[in-house]
Amino acid sequence: MSNVDIGKISFFIEQEIAAGHIPGAVLSIIHKGNEVLKEAYGSRVVYPETAPMRSDTVFDLASLTKVVATMPAVLQLMDQGKLSLGDPIGVFLPEFQHLQEEPIRIMHLLTHSSGLRADIPGIRGMMHLSRDELVDIILNERPVHPPGTKVMYSDIGMILLYLIVESVTGEAFDTYLKRELYEPLEMLETGFCPIFDDTRYAITEYSEQRQAYKSGIVHDEKAELMGGVSGHAGLFSTVHDLTNYAKMIRQQGIFKGRRIVSRAAIELMTHNFTPYNQEHRGLGWMLNHQSSFWFGGDYVSEYSFGHTGFTGTSLLFDPKQDLQIILLTNRVHFGRTEHILRIRPRLHNLILSQIE
Image 1 (cartoon, helix red, strand yellow):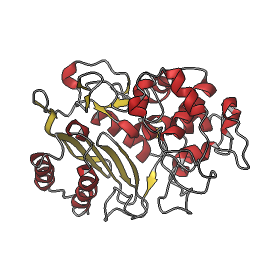
Image 2 (cartoon, rainbow, N blue to C red):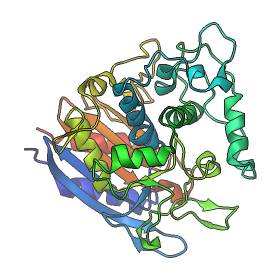
Image 3 (cartoon, one colour):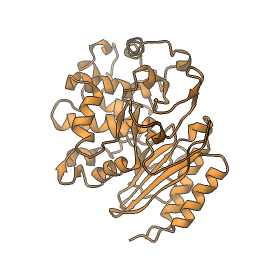
């Protein structure tokens, strides 16, 4: 059992809140299957009126959607024999049959090595577009690098995966995920386009278009244009539900005796598919590579992996230490500052320094 000094960790987060770097946070630490800490700090909203953060606060997960929705959906479809990592995406999206020597494959999308751009320039000025118009833009994208040669983190690639999941399953992305992933994992407060009492949300950024702070409305512009449901962002959840997800990953795809994802898929997802690049990528996950891109800190093992979300969320796994850390903040409530980039690795160092 770990001897984590909860007071030191709480003081660290409270200092960051006092400095105005984040409005609040919910932190969960699970070591060897035991919940060492689950605590809420600060405020879930500061503007226009302050309200306290709670352990059941609902967060906009932002890019954690990629690994808590899109990636597991693809792994499940692989388990069912409905697709493979080597499949060219044109098999599922005929509109994307671009003439090129090396086609973009499922593996490329999951590992951010498709060569597709990270984003659509000027998207904040395109909020008049319809969902179909945005999808049409994405289906007409061309890679700027040959697939499989460079890691370039791409929301566009994850939106294509979302379209592929819908094509393969023949149903809405959120409908599939609710039945096949969230209900079996008892993640009953996880989903897209949430409907909760307004007091439950961690409020995000001020929207000029809405003339109000976003509450229960996805922060990401592309996901908002997609109607709130997409493969790159849009998912909302709580620390309780993410803890269940983390337990499933820790237990090699099993939750409460039920197989959710195959052991083979869980083992494969942390294989380094991009040894040619400084930023190492597994299937969806960022892998420990001890560079300026790595958010996990200095003390995690070489087997660690995780992901972050732009709103201020993160998941970190260290299988060697048998440790999972969930940090949920709504740092964008204070604008798009970069304080979170230093908070994560320093917090992880503080926690790991106490793990025995």
